[in-house]
Length: 124
Image (tube, rainbow, N blue to C red; front, top):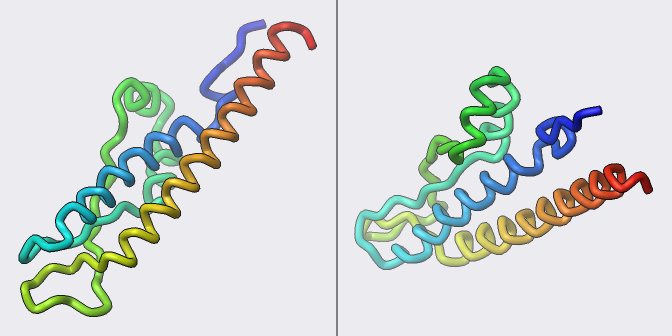
C-alpha cells in the first residue's frame, strides 16, 4: 500500500513555508525601523491558508516544488512617525516572536506526523 505523503503530512509543510516567508517579512520590517517612509508589511495567515485550500491538486503540487509567495499587506500603524515610517518596534518584535513560536509548533506537529509514518512503515 502506497503512502500519500501530501495527505499524510497535511497542511504542516505549507504552514512552515508560510512561517518562513512571514519571518523574512517581519525581519525586513525590523531592519527598516529607522528608514524614512518605509511601510511595514505583513502576510495574513488566514488568507494564505485559504489560498492553499482552494487551489487544485495539480497547482498545489507545482507550488510545493517552490515556496508560494503570498500577498504582502501593509500594516496600519497606530501612531505613524513624522518621517512616514509605519514600523512600530514593539509590535514587530511581538509579531516576530509569535511567528517564531508558531513555527516551532508547526515543526513539532510535522515531526510527530513523520514519527507516526515511520512507525507505520516499520509496522509498530
